[in-house]
Length: 433
Ligand code: URA
Ligand code: CA
Image (cartoon, rainbow, N blue to C red; front, side, top):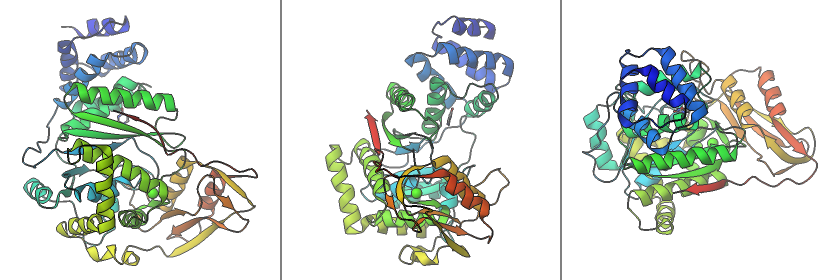
């Protein structure tokens, strides 16, 4: 086989065979096929697309390019949730304990990464003592015992994807649905998921800004999952404004606690119930989505969900008393308000820009070397559609520096008011099963 022939075949719009895709992925991973040929290939894919079979083949070739995690020793169907990323997305913190409380095993491998706020592990580290440096055996034991544990990413998972993603980043080929779909799905499958629930965000703060594209991506991932024997479902949810109210690490822990107590912001609470229902259903802990939702509501109402969170925190060294006393979480020195300059209705909260403002306060990492400040961040007091009076607070700013002029300006730029009534955006645009 010669790589040049595969490039030509794809350039001319033909379907590659499983063997050809394996040859390409293996050769690229071990260095036999150079970057320049693979970049020509990704550009050909960008213009010529991939068939459903090619996408599934590419996904599995990337899964097999490195180590895979086996969760066989964990009883039950392991369902993983993946979000394509947004601002202030607190769902992972809530969903873990919520679905674990109804018996769904959650074996979460998580990272830190770059972004507006820290990753799930950073956020959890706002709980004093909590750590994720546990041995694999201990991880498995904890999931079997408590139905929930979180471990830091380790091992050489999907090296082909890492290499390919970096290459796409500098060859203008990130934005290709078959390549994105196989990239995301390969990581979930390599991490041991039996079934997958996807939260594909849409809107200004999302990776996919247009609804049609978001649907196409979701559809493709669901197809890949089902093709390779992992039941997969997707929800398309709104990211035209941040999800929930809190954006920050300790602030989001507090928000997750509220939500597990049934007192979270409406949009976050609802999205968690929807995604959670799919997880419970796919884990076969309920025979319908309605039944799954009822079980989750019972777990919240009875206190089982919040108890599961406490047990999980304690098992990994955390001081679970913060659940009842969130005031003991890391606190910022300066708490100030961003007051509305006029009366009106909130018509826009540019999620990206608000996220950037949170990062400027120190809530997230701009580079791998940045140090996160767990205490700082933003709490929205208004969301799109809300009425606001001049002088009322739009946002509460938690900072550890006194001079936050730039942050305030950024926030004023990103929150628009209208004199006319505005409808709140839809939260869930579609579900794909
Ligand atoms: N996220 C991923 O993991 N992969 C992509 O290709 C794009 C976004
Ligand atoms: Ca939030």
